[in-house]
Length: 352
Length: 74
Image (cartoon, rainbow over all chains, first blue to last red; front, side, top):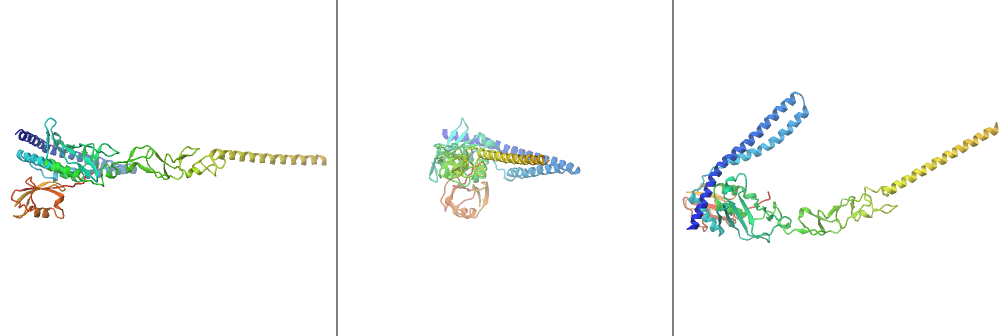
């Protein structure tokens, strides 16, 4: 008897919230209309600016207006689609108290157990343990906050809580490929879930959520099941997923972003263990490019630091030597020319 | 006869439909959900599981809910 009273109490509370939701539906429609009105006013303002710009032949200003128009008209279809969601969907009657009680009874039959928390104002069911592609994710608790049902158009009123969590190795918050931080990404079930909650069909809502949890969509998970256990970086041991895993082109080991780099000469991806260093600029080079050395001093040089087989220091030294030789040659030539002049002058004096 | 059909596959809205007298649940499913397999759905009449040859009556409430729905990552 106490259970029946409790069920009726909960059903009554749900009915009150659904009545508030009907009011909030029109509030949300009004809000969306305000958004559209704002966009249209902005468009009108830009249109006036463009007219002025064209009158003065200010083409640069007209171009700026054109870009503003492009941005505004791109936003308008979204505003319109949000409005149509409310105007096209038929307004349903709020279910009777008897219908809500029947729905809650059916919910208990479908799930075998139903928890009411009158203090927190929640209804919760627990799924059977879920296994997807041999990965055991454990049972999940789907918990609906009755009070938040009235804010359905602003925020999600329910949570999906892992009771025996086996989260993804790379993100503890992802307890299911489609659950992050206890929020279910409804995907294809989004419209049906919203309709079920709007109409007070709570059994349908919980059943739909369970169906999503029992399905793996490989095209768009938070973390793919193939990456669930993660892969350890060969160098530091940290967990990696396929997006932040790099294969060294020399040792073939998989390393994380922190333990990988690339050769500045040939751009090959390498791990830090395989990487050598250009002794001039200290940038990493791969083992193959590290065989390139200065022919004079034998330091390892990357492609950027070596010119004509010489490192910058040896090249400078070579150039200085060449310069000195040129000066010496020039000096010798001048001395030779001066001696010839003196000899010629002596001959003239002798002749005179 | 007039029935309330709650189709949770897709849009998910409930609506009244007219069908021939004497139609069974299996016939109803095949007509309203062409190309789909009943084993992929939870089918309830008046909130109860029923046999496929259950004969529908005036005012019955039929709910069809897919057991597999693809989620996503927001």
